[in-house]
Length: 92
Image 1 (cartoon, helix red, strand yellow):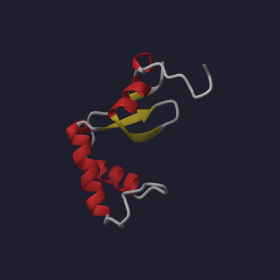
Image 2 (tube, helix red, strand yellow):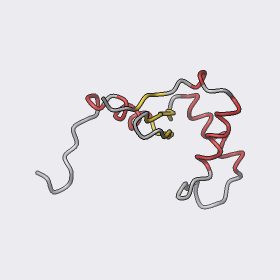
Image 3 (cartoon, helix red, strand yellow):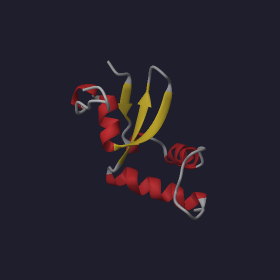
């Protein structure tokens, strides 16, 4: 078992979701382009992407950590058997 689950947004209290999105949007290495974008705008961009299903909220029970991933990456963590077989460069 992978230990990761997708978390339905409706199961997360609004205040907690906003705090998660703010923390994610302010992480080091998060790049939103050439110009600095206000935190509130980044949070709303994330919220829209989560609501549309382009991004997914996942929780890793083994590591006790959460993350926001694109739907393909989230699916491969939740169900590794569904991940496409990818051959690393030079491993032919």
